Amino acid sequence: MGSLRMSVLLAATAFVYGCSSDPALSLHMEDNGKSFSVAEDQDVDMTTFMVGAGQYGDPGISSAAVRFDGMEFPKAQVPGGPTQIFHFHTVASGEAVVTIPRTGEGIGGAPHIVTPFVVTLLVK
View 1 (cartoon, rainbow, N blue to C red):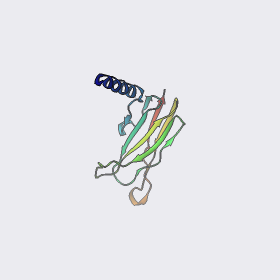
View 2: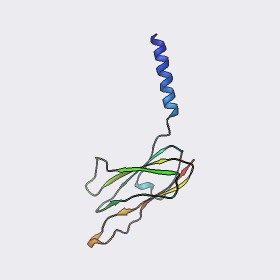
View 3: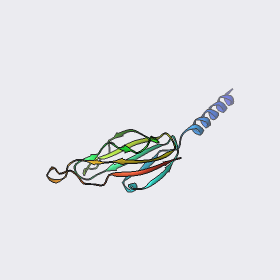
């Protein structure tokens, strides 16, 4: 009887792992401006950080191939400025340009003029 339970357990484990989606693609500041091929039904995490006042704002996505699932401030932060993790999920094949603008004020209250974090996701 024990070997039957073990066989069922092994088969169930193989089924779960066989049906799971690809692991999350983890992108960082050095990936700004690059393109990435990703599978449908895949998570994509983008980690941003900055030095000084402000933070990254609400992302823009150029197509419905990618869905924004939210943003978090991780517990581990550096003193110079905020680290943020943006969570996305690919939902259909196609190309999506994800643009995350930087917000906040510069010296004397002037707006920051800084290039946003931009990546292109090619969903296959």
